[in-house]
Image (tube, rainbow, N blue to C red; front, side):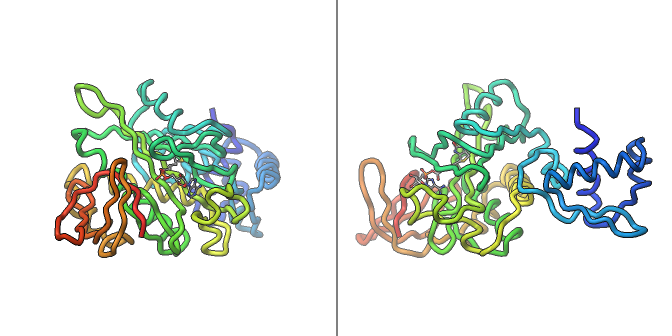
Amino acid sequence: NITVTRKLVQRLIEAQGTAISGQQLADEFGISRTAVWKHIKELEEQGYRIESVKKKGYILSALPDTLEPTDIQALLKTGRLGQNMHFLESCPSTQIAAHQLAQEDAPDGTVVLTEEQTAGRGRMARRWHSAANKGIWMSVILRPDVPPQKAPQFTLVTAVAVVRAIEQVTGLKPEIKWPNDILLNGKKCTGILTELQSDADGIQALIIGIGLNVNQLREDFDPEVQDIATSLKMESGDDVDRKQLVSSILYFLEQYSDLYIAEGFGMLKLMWESYSSTIGRPVRARMAKETLEGMAEGITEDGVLQLRTPDGKLHGIYSADIEM
Ligand code: BT5
């Protein structure tokens, strides 16, 4: 049930900067050239920048800063991820919405996106601050055919995908802090939360939550995180196109999760380690019952952090907060 206006945008996005004449668009959509022109005007009012080049036609030169799903889908280069996309103007948490959809049999690759979360969450019931209209607050439903013990690595696979997408879209060079943080200049720009729906038959669904600070300024952050958080805009000095970023994250996430499922963690472990700020450094790992200090030597094939304490013992860390 997509309107002509939306289809027109998709057509202009797919043209990738080459002009399409009003006549051609009129023919394709079975409407008059005047009607095409009216749709173009309407789109300009919505914030789309469209140049009309004499004798050539229309070129789309900029998209408005919205998360319009049909625009994102026109940018997508995936087979499955994001092909089914739910957009919510505001919601408590995209994780909650995605869990619900997964129970209702939403297909592998379903994405939930929102402009604002009123109860965004991190690990262990911590809060995730999600300023309205400034970030990417997204959950992806995957239904991989792997045993439950292979689930935790999806957090690491997702971290690599998000780093690659940030690099591709902004040129920034993020680092990964084990297990689920992405940092720029030592401050957190992304958190990842992987949750599981499983039963006796194994994994029913993975719900991968990604919170990415994109266009916030310092004052847009809650005082609680102002000193530890950063955004892509704060680091690059530019506004960043959230639609491109979503499309790029989904592209890399599909590539890397398929690679992980087909060939195991080997390749991705190497990539993860190359982006890691944790490995090869002295760290403090705060866990529920104890705190250990030592050298982070690497991660295992299972994604477990290997920490060597001064007494020479090697400890496998499954879950912790890392301080450096
Ligand atoms: C995380 O937890 O980093 C996982 C965050 C996942 C958020 C996404 S958004 C879409 C989806 N829907 C949800 O409801 N959640 C997911 P954790 O490692 O526990 O870190 C939480 C800590 O990060 C908090 O205690 C704060 O210190 C800090 N924090 C909160 N909001 C932040 C922000 N916007 N930027 C940077 N740090 C933040």
